[in-house]
Image (cartoon, rainbow, N blue to C red; front, side, top):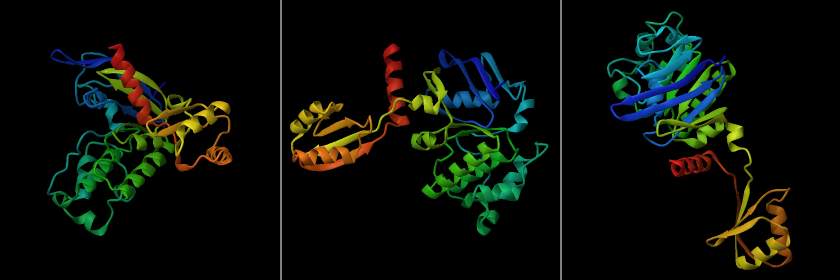
Length: 303
């Protein structure tokens, strides 16, 4: 059985359908990306999972126990950072961890959490939160989400405000915890980051789940493309036709599908033989963002 399971969960705000028969699972040790446009229902779904908000119908089960607005028994082993962390300006990082650990039976080691989330510096361990940068507050929010030794961590925009090094460190932290069996449900607009770490992807749009699958399956069928600018694109297209390359022109560039072993060196070799001058050449790989846009486009046409 999945660690987290949503079955036909719906939520209305007046006449607005924020969640419409939402169903998906999170398996133990999996990193799941919850993605969709603004207003799609991501935050509402996360708030329902964490018991912060009621829902009208359906079932949410975590660790074999039901989760509702009035039933929080299961949530001792769930951590979350939704929207912005609740930070108290006159408390230090350590004070925050002690505060948020008060209602949990087996909290994580404070020093270990501070070290792993990069909030263990001499000054940072002593300074009050009112002096923290946005990135510091975000790291503290992640530390708070981990204080319960959780089986599942819900993170909404965890990379918000972080510099590149901190993004790298948080990514490695998430991956290392997942290897230890901790599950993550992450919503982020940094799709490149999600593509790097997510095992599964759940796409939500207009309150409905459009697609829920593994990341490899979602990106399957991708072929790198070779994008070329030359002094004679018509000659290049003619050559591509003769060689049975899958090529098409867009603007001043020609895009060739890199399949059946075709690579940049092979293309350059053939162009050299027919003396076509190459101004620029590079490869492109399809990515999560492109796939998401295609899915949302198709969903919009169906709607």
